[in-house]
Image (cartoon, rainbow, N blue to C red; front, side, top):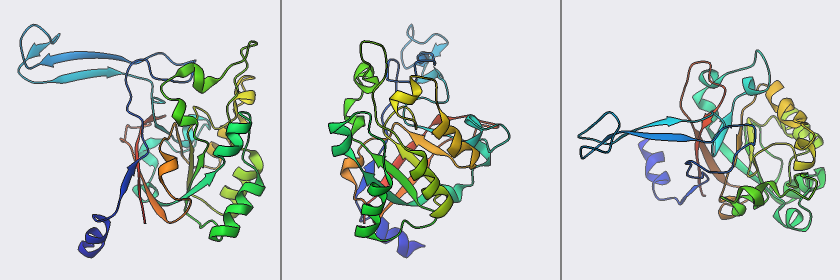
Length: 247
C-alpha cells in the first residue's frame, strides 16, 4: 500500500463537487438551506456563544452534489449506512454527450453513444462508475438556466435513457452512475413528474450521484473516482464529496 500511495500522490486530482450554501440550485420541491452561526470567535455574533467557530446546517439530504441511495426511490432497498465503502473507489467512465446536449437540450444518451465509447476504449468494466457529461454544470449556480423552462414551464435539460441504464447496470454490471443535472430523468419527463429512470436505478439497489461538475477536466477512460459521504443511520441522501484521480 505505501507503494500505491507514492504513485497516487503524484497524480492530478480533479474535484467533481459543487460547494453548497443557501440559494444554490435544487429540486423545486425541497426547501432552501438555512445556516446559523452558533459560536463565533468574538462575543456578540454567535447565537450560543463565542471562542470558536461552529455552524448549524439545516438542509435536505439531496443538497448540492449529493448521493442518492437506493432507498431514496425504492422502499426496502439500501440506505446510506448500508453502502459498502468498497463502492466508493471505482474506475471512472465518462460518456461525453456535451455537443449533443448543446444542440438539443432535451437530449438523452443513446446506445450509439455507448457503442462509440466502447469502440474507442473497450468494454465498460464491471464495477465502474459511469458519469454522463453534458456540461450542464457550467450553468451553475443559475437555477433558471439549469431548469431551462419554456413559457409553459416545461423544463428542458438532458438526461439518461432506460435503454442505456439497463445496458450499463444489467449487462456491464456497473456499480454506480452520476450526472451534472438535478435529475436522472430529462427535463421533459420530470416536468410530468416522471422519475422512472431514477426509480429504475434505485430498484437495482445501486446509488447515484447528482449535480456533478468538472467532467470536462477528466478523460473518458483511465481515471479513478472517489465518492465519499457521511453515514447517517437509515439515511435517504446526503451531500457528497466526489473527486477523480487522473491516470
